Image (cartoon, rainbow, N blue to C red; front, side):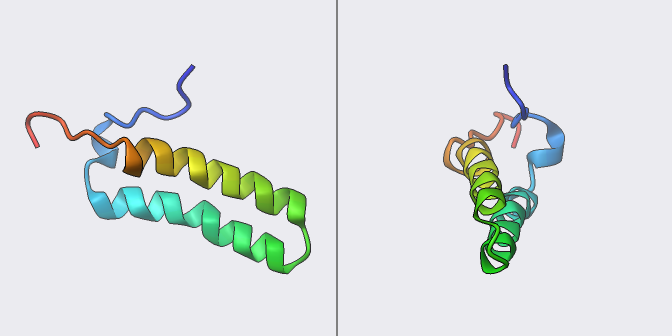
Length: 64
């Protein structure tokens, strides 16, 4: 089961992919600084999952 479809046209602009990946990491930092380590690890894991699919394994379509 895929939770995110990286081939959707919404994810074509690079700035949008990087912003979507950065948001959970920023929130993980907020949670970590508040002492909520469980939520920090959860959001860091979400950010890692998004980074894997939207940045590290990004394959542009042939028409891009």
